[in-house]
Length: 172
Image (tube, rainbow, N blue to C red; front, side, top):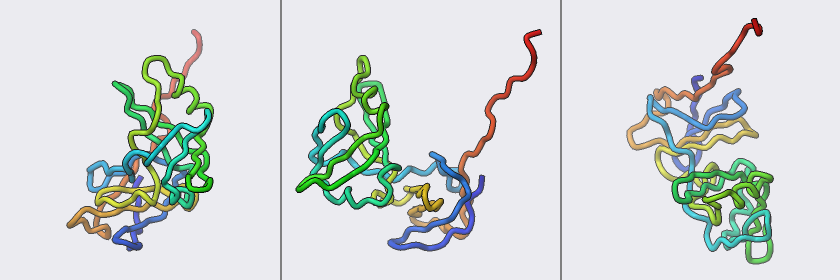
């Protein structure tokens, strides 16, 4: 599905509205763009069974914490866990992860997660040309163009499929 109507935003970003509820990939002129991402969680330590504490206090002010995913690369395995909430707790931010997936990933046989390798999908992480972020609540896509990209002329699409496979018939 095409994303059209791009308008300049702040800090060199562009934005466009869409009627889609969610998507995980964005293509600009046929090239897959990278979802906004940052490095590992600063000074992360596991906090109870449900999340982390970090010195990155600014995360408590991030706009849509439920859109954020923590990504873990453990040996051969790449796991993602969604954030449930982020709150300020004195000189730390407390991050509660969405359950039960976080507990499953922590107890997985052979490749258990500990601290995230990187953080993905937050507007506050949109800082490198070629990255994008989708604000699901506002149904707005943000993109930071690469040098030379003209968003008023770019062809922007997201995968949208209603049915991948449909089986019909009877037992006979």
